[in-house]
Amino acid sequence: MLNKFIEVMQNHIGRDCALGGKELAQALGISMREVRKLTDTVIDAGVLLCSHPAHGYWIALNADELEATCQFHRSRALHELCKEAKLRRVGLLDLLGQMHLKT
Image 1 (cartoon, rainbow, N blue to C red):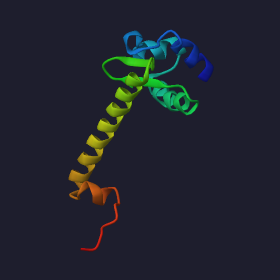
Image 2: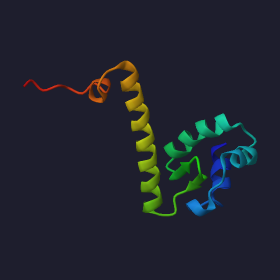
Image 3: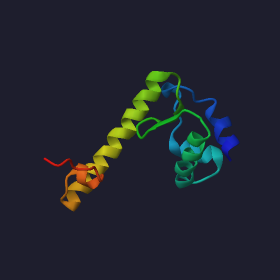
């Protein structure tokens, strides 16, 4: 399936050529859930796969696209961690298990 994924994505290099998740799932003959799981395998294989809910999936055309994708994922992850910290009523650093310096 990895090879088929990469084959499909070869036609989707650059954000302007992004492929929607539903279209990608249909092209691969798998569910959206399986697409999301497969993206980890693709990235682990070294493919610079970018994604964004508003655009879909694409292979990075340049360093700027890759950086924008990394920033998007970091922002999303931090947002979720902040939400968890609020629910647990602890500070973000406590949630992450940061060491406290004696003062």
